Amino acid sequence: MRKLFPLVLGAATLLAAGCGPNCESTCQRLYGAGSQTLNGEGVEDCGIQRAGRDASDLTDTCLKECYGALDNPGEVGAFDPYHRAGSNESVTLDNERQAALWMQCITETSCENLQDGYCAPVW
Image (cartoon, rainbow, N blue to C red; front, side):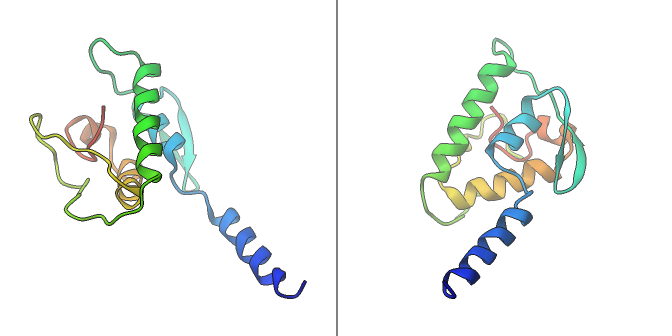
């Protein structure tokens, strides 16, 4: 039992501190139309729109891509969501470290900059 106590205490600490971005909060921030609390602060959702696609479709694509990346271990490599992606640049989330960096970028970046190519990919 003594060996389990530090493990249980550590897990409880992680859960209590786990108020950072996740796939749901990130995709909601991109395509939602309300507000939410991220990292203890109120954040407005961006309501990004794309021609021919509704918010539900965009959110589903976002969640699928985010969770798919989280299933793959890997390094960040050359991935840099803080670099503005041009309209002809194809950016993908390939692994868990890239997804974590991408989620943090979405949380920290203004809606205007998100629409202007920062924190790619934004579907």
